[in-house]
Length: 182
Image (cartoon, rainbow, N blue to C red; front, side):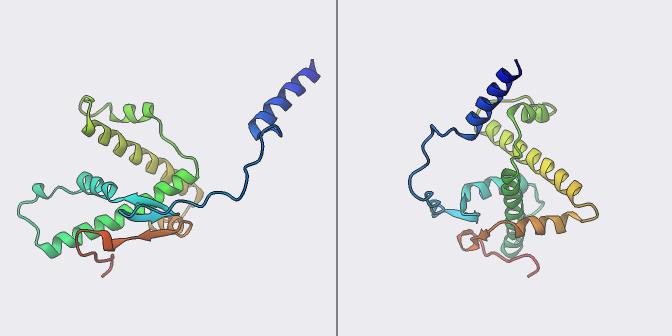
């Protein structure tokens, strides 16, 4: 009986690891494809398209809610800060992906259940994606704070960014970019 269990465990282990019956891949691993030309940001070789930044701006800044329109220089400054925040968020999401942190549809729907009833269409999909991102970031930051007691969030974010190759492409922005602190 014990021998049968050991045999079964061995078979399961070999299947999980890839048995010798599976031929090794021929040649060197494929080089990563270059990021798309419209990538506004590249993290670890993966391009983030401009549409992602546009969605981020739409979710975080509504100029129609202002009492009066922003002057062009002020608008560029606001959008520059949003770009900085977007780069930080995308870097944290890359870290979450590297750590295998995933948020499922059930969690997203539960989180959104306190909001207006779910409708179909692109707006519903955008709300779900925004919720998934928010939940992923919360889970990652909870983990990072537990791993780094005594460090503030800004320091933790800088350390995470240092573990990834982050290449912002502000030349692709439709406004004059001013880095934070300038």
